[in-house]
Length: 147
Image (cartoon, rainbow, N blue to C red; front, side):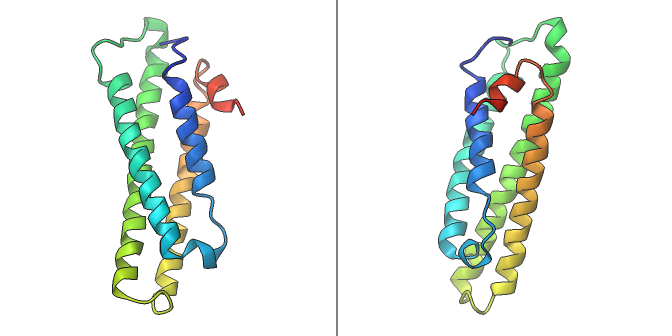
């Protein structure tokens, strides 16, 4: 697995996307339907990407880590699984917000939308923690810290 640069930059791109695309702090803008729709769409793409990435790395019979990389490989697979769950959680929260907006006006449910936004931001924080764990893998760290 070491040195296979074709696989790792996709993960770095996605992690940067999650970090930037989900960093919404303006309550008025972030609780609009357009924002929740955007969050839903982006996490749907990332969910598909992560599933494919996890399958190719962690469930493929063709990719077997060397004995010295087994622990790092297991850590990568564990963190990819955790990341998939966080992305799915974000997508679910965005879908809930969109459902609320279809049944009510934003003014009627503003406090609910703020709560959903807060939970999305909590998922984002856990994504940042997962990224920090992934950076502990020596051969993955340079890819994840590049600009």
